[in-house]
Amino acid sequence: MRLVSKANSRCSAYVSHIPPSQNTWADGPVRFLLTADQRLDYTRLSDPASRSEFITEFWKVRDPKSETPENEARIEFERRVAFADSRFSQDETRGSLTDRGMVFVLMGPPTWVGRKPISTGEDVNDPKGMSQYSDLDVRNALRGTSSASSARVYDKMTSSGTRLPSSDGNYREVWHFRRELLPAGISFHQVDFEFITRQGYGTNVWQREARTLTTLEKARSAVRAGTFTRAASR
Image (cartoon, rainbow, N blue to C red; front, side, top):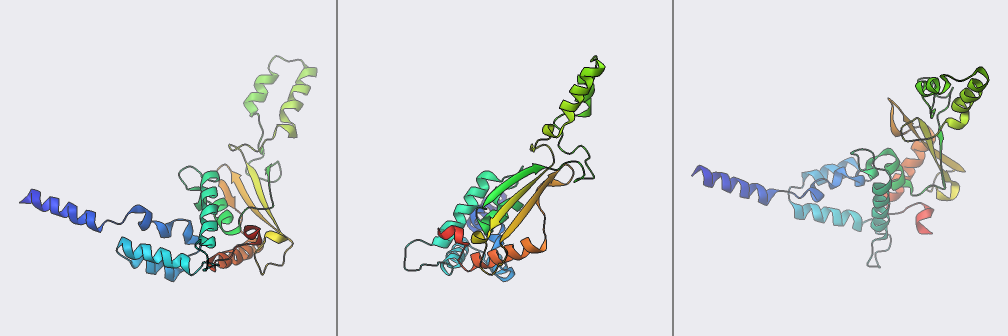
């Protein structure tokens, strides 16, 4: 009887099991759009059919062209998510759930992206910045050289030209969004999102400041309403 009981318990668990794709939907990139009440309503649903209906209705009310068979808002959102997942993953974190992924999902592609090393004087915690050569490398290169050649070797190995924005060092990545790519209601001519990578600090950590916070919130509101920045409509 115990074996039968265990078997029945497993069958019951299987019937009530919610597939991961449905169970984790609210924890995915759509969480950037969900209000607290919507998230609560979704998590209270106990069966896959109800959750599937919730997702369908969620996107239906955001369809900008209900007369067409496609839901342009959902297509654009999922397109951005797919791109972010393929480009911005960090360790075990899904690309669209990183700081850069969140900005990309809500803002779309920036006008221009720049990256530069955090040099001496910019980062007091790392005076070497992103030197290509360690102190040990320099000492080994200088060993056995004459005074005249030592100066040349030292200058070559410690010059600004040896500082590279590698993924193992410290660098600043900046996403520039020009006026035509900004959400409605933003009057700035350009907004720059800055992401810092530094040992002991994190990888591509978004630097939150008033201008970017305001811009991102406007973009979030637009996407929640089923509209995107002008970049998506071109």
